[in-house]
Each structure stands twice: as C-alpha cells, then as structure tokens.
Length: 319
Image (cartoon, rainbow, N blue to C red; front, side, top):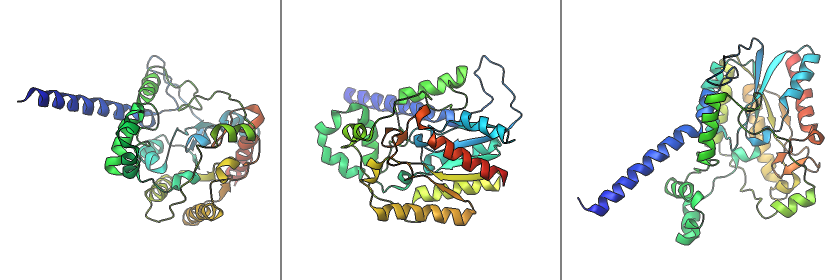
C-alpha cells in the first residue's frame, strides 16, 4: 500500500474518531441532566417539591428563576424551578433530549419559542464555494462546520453551536461536580452590563440580519416543536409557551409580514394544543435592558422580562 495513502487513511480515521468523541460530548449534559445531581463525589440530594423547567435558546436564559420561585412561594405555589435554556438551542436539537426531560417528571415545562427558530435556512453549499479556498482556511475554527454544512447543505453550526472543547469541558465538569449554577445549569449565569441602543447599533449593527420566516408546514423546526409539545402533554406535563424578546435593531431587519408569519405559526400551535401564548417578542424592543440585540441583560435593572414572566406564571398556575 502506498505510504501517502496510509498516511491519508490514518489521518481520516483519526479525524473521524476525534470528531465522534467531540460529537458524543457536545450534548451529553442535555441527556444526563438531573436536578438532584451535585457531582460524582457528592451524595444525591432528593428534591421532594414538584418542578418547573424552562427550555429554549439563550434568549430565555436571563430569566431569573430564583426570583420567580420566591414570588411563587409568597402566592402559595411551591415549586423547584430550573432554567434549562441552552446556547443555540432549536426545536430540532431539543427534540433529541425531550424524553429525558419527560423521565425527570416535571409538573410544568415553559417553552420559549423564538422567531429565529423558524428562520429560512441558508444555502451553505453556495456560501462555502463562494468564499473560495483562502476564505475558508483563514478561519480554521469554522472550517469543519462550514465544510460539513456545504456537503449536506444543512446547518451544522447547530450540531456544534460553540467550541467543542468548551462543550466537552462542560459535560466533564457536570459529571464530576455538578452544575456551577444549580437553577441555571447549562450556561454561566453571571451579571452583565446593559448597553444603550446607540452602543448596540455601533457594536452589532453590521452583523444583524434576518432571512425571513419559513412558514412551510413541513419545516423541520415546526414539526419538531409539535412533536415536543405533543410528547410533553401526552405524558401529563402542562406546557406553557412564550415568545422571547428581541431588541429594536433586529426588527430593523425584519419585515412586518415576517413578524405576522411567525405569529401565525405560534397561533397555529396555540390552537392545536389549546395553549395560551405570552407574546413578548416585540414588547421590550426599545427598552434599555439589552446586553446585545438578542439577549436581555442579566442585570437587576433588566428584571422587567423576569417579572412579566412571573406574573403570567402565577396566573397560569392558579387556574
């Protein structure tokens, strides 16, 4: 066998093996999560209260569930609440771990369904070849994702939404010592600064865009949302839905017709599953509560988002 071929074959095997290990660990924490887990060296804490889970992408994560929990107790509603929102989460990604959530037997799951969940897909193949060889190799950290996306014409950034190294470390840390923030286990829940609208436009103005809503009923994200909700309800879990907010800079790139298309999708979900929706996607667009165009800041001066969710929850849970 030719030596060069052997080297190429060895590199290919190593590449596939390493990629497989990375892929295994990327979402491992979603499939092994247990609110009673405090690490391999700690005794498992038995939680006797009924639980509520928040799920969705990172624009759900700034909701302060500890603040909500305190207020619920004052209203004779005693629950353990966990914010399980995750970076770059989408319905097609979350559907893979939904049965694990069912096994944890929460009383309620509150799902933040985002406008960007139904954004039209990109033509990754054309983008890859239009960038050319140099354009692709100048960003080696993105080359692997871009290459796979071009081959399958699918968004592999959702398979590898952040650094594989960071994801592996997160999964290993979780196994060894549990989450850093027990009620916000999947992302760092640290206070960050509120930016003015001028600062947001100056920093993020050129990077914001929106490709429009894919309102095809065969859209994979739409089908995944329906499957998730149907599975939760069929297992006796109450489902509440809200639409996470966006800054006004995002809406400068979104046509009114696209907002209406998104609202039609949510209305369809509401009618099909008999769920009242809390619409927040455009409520705080002009408020100065943002850390960037997509995320309300984790900040005591940005609690309006949490407080609106809290009041809505109290009303829904008392019904």
